[in-house]
Amino acid sequence: MSNQIIESTKTSSGYTYSLTTKFLQSEDGDTVGVYGIDITGCGECAFLSDISTDFERVHELFLLLSQEQAYPVHLAEIAEDMINEWSQSPKKH
Image 1 (cartoon, helix red, strand yellow):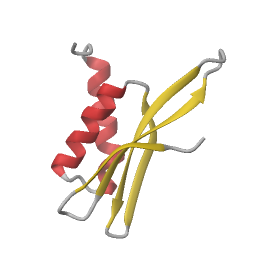
Image 2: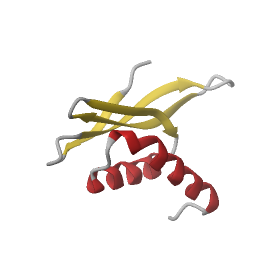
Image 3: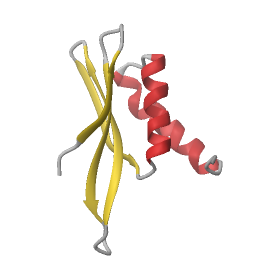
Image 4: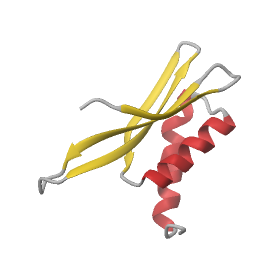
């Protein structure tokens, strides 16, 4: 299945940050939405299509990346750090 863009923003640095979703079938037959992030621009691109099924957390990461104007090369490292942080702290409600 292809990714669908949920939200996108272009920054003054020339990069476009996109929050994406796609639907996958789980092993037990359920359809599950997973969320990812794409960063493109200036001849560079990076994408992680399946960061988490938790929209709120991936959206938080998307906002952080776009506000800080992170370079595509840093997407995987920053996402990994956030995922590690999520696993260490309960979700805020």
